[in-house]
Every structure is written in structure tokens, then in C-alpha cells.
Image 1 (cartoon, rainbow, N blue to C red):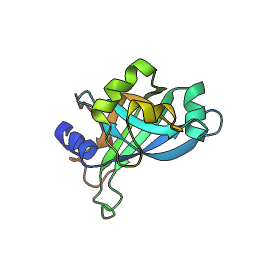
Image 2 (image 1 turned 30 degrees about the vertical axis):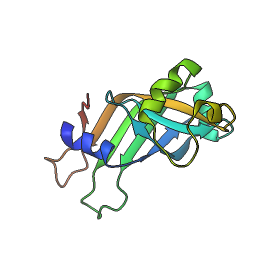
Image 3 (image 1 turned 180 degrees about the vertical axis):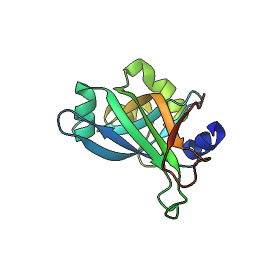
Image 4 (image 1 turned 45 degrees about the vertical axis):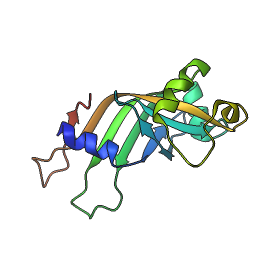
Length: 143
């Protein structure tokens, strides 16, 4: 189960990020992940999910391949905390985050509308592969 969950993380590049500040919101974000399963994503400061995170870092997320056939799919659900990175944390994010969407040099990032965030997961869940006909989640450990 743990390796299956790791494969889901490594074989996808978008997660659905759920935030709330009295007004729940979900947003798909492109992510990269480090070897400790800390997720990195970029967003603009005026996005609703960013505004939520600045007030409350508690999040939920889902990672899945939306092309799976009905009744055969599996994915990860989780919860944790998400934070805007401090300037001294950006070098670590740049070790893991790769994109062709924007220029990731430090000079370009200073003038970019995009800012780095990290998700520190607290729990991961997948559908129990032993319960084929029941939608039952089980906790898995990725690290």
C-alpha cells in the first residue's frame, strides 16, 4: 500500500488543494515533491487559496489520475499545513521544483507574480486495495 501511494505521488503532477476561511475553495495546483514528501507549488498572492493559506494554513488535498475508469481508480487524500516560503527556503524549493512555465532564477522570481508555497502533509489515505467493493480509506506512510 505504501509503495502504491508513492507511485501515485510520483506519477502525477497536479493536486487538488482544499482551503477554507469561512468560504471553502479547491484549486488544482502543479506540484513537485521532495524525498520527504513535502510538496512545493507556486501561486499568485491574490488567488483565493493563497488568501486562505495566509489566514489559516490547514489544508486538505487529493492526488489522482482522472483518466482511470470508473470503479477502478485510486488516489491519495491527505491533510496538512501549507505555508508561503520564506526567502531563505527558496533554494530548497528550487532543488525539487521544475517547470517550463516561468523562469525560476532568483532574479526572475523577485519580479514574478508567483510565489513558492510548501505543503507539509500530516496524513495520507488511499482506498483499501483489499476492499474491492467498498469505498474504505486506509492511512499510509510515504516516508
